Length: 85
Image (cartoon, rainbow, N blue to C red; front, side, top):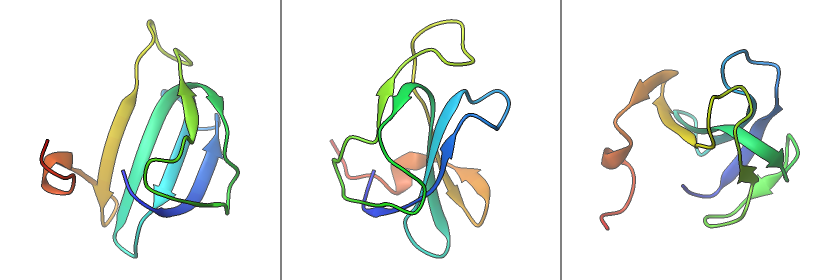
C-alpha cells in the first residue's frame, strides 16, 4: 500500500498463514496474509509497489490475499487510506 518498514514476516499468527505486516507510521500498519512465499525480511524498508510476497493459500481454503489497514491497532476501512482508482 505504501512505503514502510517490515515489522513481521512469518507464519506464527494462527489463521493468517504466511503474513507480512508493514508499519507506515506511528499509527498505521498494513497486513498481507495467506501468502505462498514471503520475499522480505523483518526490519527491511520497503517502497510503494515493491513485491513483498507471492499470493497463495497458506492457512486458507483457496488462493487469496487477506489485506488489512490497522490504525492504532484496530482494523479500519482501507478505502480511506488508499488512492482513488
